[in-house]
Amino acid sequence: MSDTRWFAVQTDAERTTLRLAGAWRLQHLAEIEAALAGLRLPTPVAVDGSALTSIDSAAALVLLRALQGTQSAEDSAAWLGFSAANGRIVEKVRAHLGATSAAGPPRRPGALAVLGRKASALADLLGGHLNFFGATLAAFGDALIQPRRLRLRELTVQLDQTGLTAIPVVALVTMLIGIVITYLLGLQAEKYGANIFVVDGVGIGATREFAPIIVAVIVAGRSGAAFTAQLGSMRLTEETDAIRTLGLSPMQVLVVPRVLALMIVLPLLVFVGDVMSLVGAMAIAGPMLDVTPSAFMARLHEALPVRHVFVGLAKAPVFALVIAVIGARMGMTVGRDTRALGIATTSTVVQSIVAVILLDAVFAVLMQALDI
Amino acid sequence: MKTENAPVIEVEAIVSRFGAQTVHDGVSFTVERGTLVGLIGGSGTGKSVLLREIIGLQRPTAGRVRLFGTDMWHAPANELDAVRRRFGMLFQDGALFSSLTVAQNVAVPLREHTHLSSATVDALVALRLQQAGLPADAGAKMPSELSGGMRKRAAIARAIALEPEVLFLDEPTSGLDPITARGFDRLVRSLVDDLGLTVFLVTHDLDTLLGVVDRLLVLARGRVLADGTVKEVMAVDDAWIREYFSVRRIDSDGS
Image 1 (cartoon, chains in turn yellow, blue):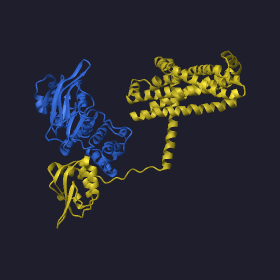
Image 2 (cartoon, rainbow over the protein chains, first blue to last red):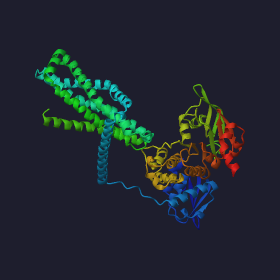
Image 3 (cartoon, rainbow over the protein chains, first blue to last red):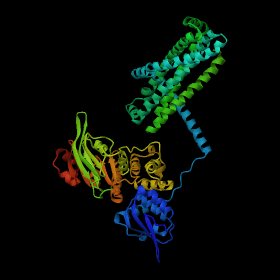
Image 4 (tube, each protein chain N blue to C red):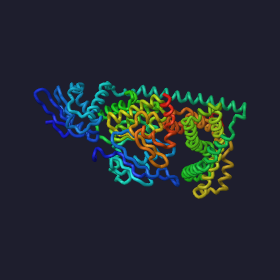
């Protein structure tokens, strides 16, 4: 009745015999499993392996699991006619099944537990940032007292990598932003014949808000991520440990130059952004709004008090400090495997962009209150 | 499956050149079913290159490689896929997928290439972990949480998941302490004896060679310099082989 190409069941007076046949191997195991599922065996059962050409441990496992609960699974005397090699494999798998009690699947944590874990992880993260920020300030203090400790070479390299090489992308993006803002403002202003006032909007908006934010976001993606990746891979290859064993401080050698470089470079990049967004605005103001470059410049002189530019530039070093500290900290504390490095790098970008935008909001409220 | 007695690995006159540098200049050997073969050679003699050429990851400049009678460099893709399911490879650092737990790592080939029920896959994973000598609770861990020895065992568990007939090991005991390394040797030996696997391993570890290997191949100057049991190879009159085994000669003389 339940005979298949893999086994036959034979019942006589004393007991039922399960005769195995063919090659019980992994590639046919799905078939075998399906066939065994329909099998209902009375006990006692003997298993006859004389017609079996081969059996591998996966097939032996499936067979033993199917027989589980019958007495033949435990009683090796009920196994007949197995060749030495096949018998040894079945024996090994039986020993394994005997040794392991079925462990249940791991419990899934509930929603509240997940929330609690995330919250405490966030608190840990922020606490760690604060701690690292303090250590960075201490290292800066050291460098102030003993200026010889400052790594000038590393600082120049970082100035180049985070500053000079960022100019093309910063210039391109801020110019496009200048064009877009002018275009959108111009569409509205044209309706009222207030073309020239577009210059007021672009001038203040770009220098005070858009250029600092956009440039900081670009730098967070570029240099913040690079800091994490560089320092993190140095940690993976134990370079940071080597620095420590040589009697140097990784904070002094690696972190201070990066933080300082970014704080120097970001205001300069924001200035580039200011100029380029105004250039973009001027370029589209002519053909679209009939505002000639000379009219644009004249209006800019009247409408853009220089304090707006300074407010924008003053925000830049603060953004830079936050981006650099987050980037360096995530790199210096990354877990010692490649996956953790990837996660940390992504996390750096997200964290520093969020931090930049939060800080900008704080600045906006603060400036309003101070009437600047 | 052809005749059971045909050699499982056949390497014929392999030549490998990188630019002007010739690494292999006519390497030939065969490996029989159910044996544990070790390959040694100095640094830069192309042991790992040879391994990669045998399993079809890197094309030799000339020569022929056959696994289970299938030419690894001229067979159609579907035939190669079938062959790939019949051997497993242990990379030097394990090459476990770092985003998956150990159990998930072992389950990857099973879920990919078989249609077994989930419960059976889980049971099989537990069996593989046990066969590789890992405790049952190791399955839930991430690869990054394991020690070097455990990581290699986890990689072995993944490599034998599909019941391969041949297992290739690239420096299986490098970076392990001697006790862990000997445990690993015993594990490899038991795979050959209990599961009937054929194992081909590249190693620098003399203890592995002296302890568990059935047959030893020595690669030097682009060719197979010696081939035989460890005793036979030690008797070969060659400067490099003499030096290689010199440490042990002193040992055995002294005792």
